[in-house]
Length: 109
Image (cartoon, rainbow, N blue to C red; front, side):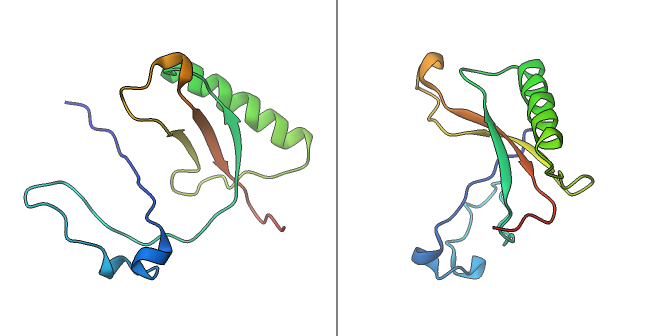
């Protein structure tokens, strides 16, 4: 069957920012723990239960807005664009919060 990658951020304060201090995965589970560098992303909201076509349309709108405003997407990087889903599965579709995220290249705050 088709598999889906999922990510869960872990708060640094509880585990002192070290992946090796996280609890071990359940035996037989397909879980990998890795540390990732922080990135800055541009985001656009996608309501409900977005289909792949809706997420792609939101990505296209966000890329056009980035180009218009002079920002550069981090093209070619691993997972340069992601669909972030923030709610539990039992939340009704009209109340769900989702975003399409695109990593930015050379962004300075």
